Image 1 (cartoon, rainbow, N blue to C red):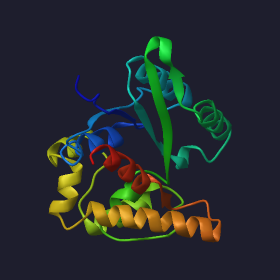
Image 2: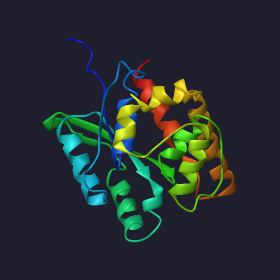
Image 3: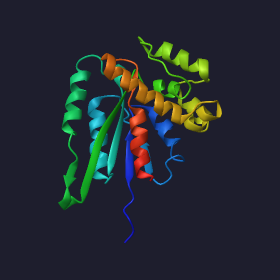
Image 4: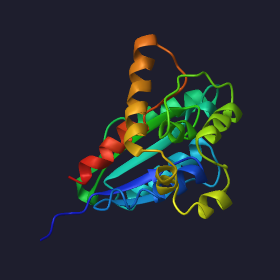
Length: 203
């Protein structure tokens, strides 16, 4: 009997993450990555998607979280409750289910990780507009499904225009180190850590 294939369901909160992780399937060729996202951006919908993924037999479910929507109540408490609920792996041997659910946060949003393809910043962004403006200084980018389709894969588009996934990972780790050292709660990304997790499956 062959080795069971590791499968990862990646849940973003919208089309940005869906299109980006779809574009990474060529990078992580030995891993079955299925990106998905709820139709409505709220914690209840995300929890339903996680439950659906567990029932479908995914070994890992990675949730990509934009922290700009978790700054205020009740979203903050709902999110913390969700993280606590899935803090331990789901293990139901009789049903043949084992699943690890992990959360990876970016503040403000996933576009910070895209900027990290090109350069590092620890600038505090009050909303998405200045972040998108900074990203557009490095590469043309529009937060629309039309643009995501037109660029034929966000990851390769960034690299074709001088960006690097390795740089994004290194910059993301740097942001987390700075966050820990300075105790700041803004401008950081855990997506570098997620890339390392995905890489483990491909060794």
